[in-house]
Amino acid sequence: MTDMTSDSRARSSRAKGLSTKFAVHAVLAGYTLIAIFPVILVVLNSFKNRRGIFTDPLGIPAGETFSMEGYATVLTEGDFLTYFSNSLIVTVSSLFLILLLGAMAAHALAEYRFRLNTFIGIYLILGIMVPIRLGTVAILELMVDLNLVNTLLALILVYTASGLPVAVFILTEFMRTLSRDIKDCARVDGLSEYRIFFEVVVPLIRPVLATVAVFSMIPIWNDLWFPLILASGDATKTVTLGVQQFIGQYTVNWSAVLASLSIAILPVLGLYALFSRQLIAGITSGAVKG
Amino acid sequence: MSDPTTEHLTTAGKSPASGRKKRRVAGRAHIVVFLAPAVLIYTVFSIYPLVESLRLSLFDGLPDGSAVWNGLGNYATLLFDANWAGQFWNALWNNLILFFIHMVVQNPIGLLLAALLSLAPRFGGTYRTLIFVPTLLSVVIVGFIWELILSPLWGVSETILGGIGLAWLYQPWLGLESSALVTVSLISVWQYVGIPMMLIYAALLSIPDELIDAARVDGLNGWWIFWKVKLPLILPTLGIVAILTYIGNFTASFDLIYSIQGALGAPNYSTDVMGTLLFRTFFGQQLQIGDTYMGATIASMMFFIILIGVSFYLVLVQRRLQRYEM
Image 1 (cartoon, rainbow over the protein chains, first blue to last red):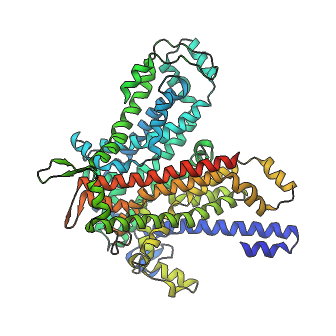
Image 2: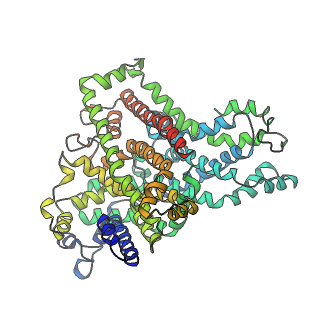
Image 3: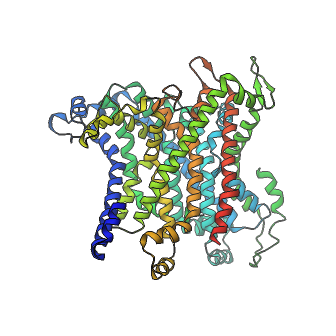
């Protein structure tokens, strides 16, 4: 970078513009390669047989090196269908609760004046600064008392509690910017406060809800800590934990390891391909600038 | 927590401070209905466990399973007892190294990438989308990907280094005490660089064009505009990035290290962090049996350490930044 700029100073301004542009693309493309190469390498090699993986790790799977043996092992030995449905149930239910309860609370904080408004607002977003994992010891005891160990409900409750602060924070900020007129009109028309929330406010905040959803989804889907501690039984394993333990058992079977990693990666990449615009728009909008 | 609100709600709604028209709504029960579920779940599964952990850290367990008051005894054990102090300081020190590496590697790279992206180059959106991919993946997946790539068995790293004439550089970095922690940190940097990049990028985009144009009219070139105009304006964002890095460092590091190096922070505790120490203490490992009270003590220590960082940020950094902004 520095060479480029000092070099180009001597040249004409047009050449300078060109070389700067080139440098910008070189750095960005270079880093992009660093970011995705390892992922591509794993996915590519998951479609090879053992010999292909070791003799030509950088090659494209083709001809005799192409093999699905890793996937066959994973599908017969690991219970990935269960893990997937567990992850899906946990993530979708937690998201639903985070969005519904978060939006309701944010609506109350943004719309109504009452004495404890500021206090509850601050109380609800404290959790942004304090990771919920620090309460793990007591969370486990609580779940034992409630008979919820090794249930998906335990995970859903914990993730809902940990996702609420960010959701309430972002949604409250956004709801404060909504025009009051439309809600007051609805009141004049005699709509109840509940119908105003569900029929007037929710449709207005739909884009922000999507952003919060994508945001909250990633840490829930990817978490290892709470599945390991609260729900490590075979019937309640999530994908992240399932892959972690599967790989622990099959360390020598490289095709199976690579295939299980790919199985965990591909759905996330697929979803990202669908929602990346939403996610990036959310991150780069005012939501996190505070 | 939800009960006290009910009492106050009936008397609320009297002071329209901002001059807004006072709106009388028949009955205020809906406020409770809107707030109660969130407050309840959050209180029971987030705040209560935190407070309960702090409480448990002041007790010690008897062999019959009952608890006795131990005051600050557990903390003294953790900080000074020969069996604990070594592990605790080692884990804390490793966490601080991890934080330091993120601050000097991850955040500057994030800043550089964001600065380049903010020039709106062609394919900027594609670069942005792809650089963010590792951030989406589970730490477990990322850990294993790198474990495979760095594995001497597979030899991919050697082949790649050989391609640029650097094969002699290759070492089994994850297995060596001297390099394991740095390697793990860099893996984490690789994964999370997308977050500072996005936050800083957003901040750079929000700078009004007039300011940049004014600086350009004053004869500043692109490089100086960045240093003298843009950087000071995004300092608050850099502050947020720093505090997020600090907090994340204490929680996210567990998943990665547990996946790659196991709960013992192999090799020889060189990658042991507060998260793995907490896990080991609470659940037991090998010869050591699980200890709820020491586990709660370690979690509480993490809480205080995070609190110190956050207070430092709120009192010193943010206040100074605000003055700077004025």
